[in-house]
Image (tube, rainbow, N blue to C red; front, side, top):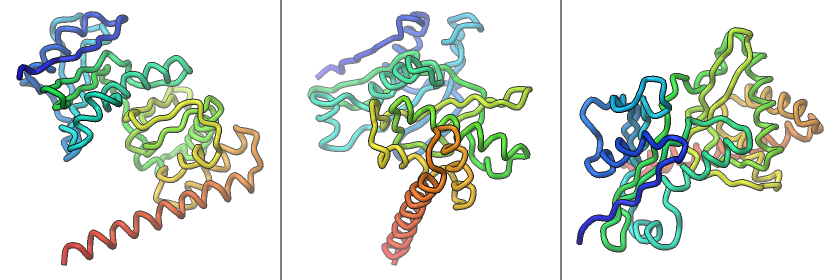
Length: 258
């Protein structure tokens, strides 16, 4: 059966259509620069020579999702939006709410009969680093205050990012010492969330340090106008539970190696 390509291009960047179609049909192009290659997906970027250098579609970041295992390959084809589709939709929703993410150029899916076989999410490539090792920043206090305020803003907007971890948060530090944050890996985001138990889960993987997590929670409480002691207790309970979970996973992996 012939493959079917389902392609959505952001109407604001029609110049991205050709490169999206080419990669959908042929996979990773020669000359692409690898960013990440893991068992679940691949990430790379490529210069799009067919558009001007000032176009949002000039340097294109591509998230290449792995072939989903059964039964998700059928579920994503018929009953539920796939990861690439959700990434594109959620990026646009974040932007509408006033938050930052690499500009969504489009997404595509390849279907073979009743199953999804490949999917891609396309964005502008940003030059900013992620926030890993933020605990060592020279302007630690300014960074903590900025991130705490940003989390408060996300929560006020009802945004729950289930993969809110240091590798998925990019930052741009301005000359005046202020910070702008950008979010990636969005396909497990929920909107309109008001349950504080869910929202506070975003504190679970911001650091391996309990003390540093506590500092962000304090900054968050100030920015959100919440009770400092109660907020700190909630954030640290989430952090502690996540650390225990990670330790159990590590122990199980170690056991299974024998």
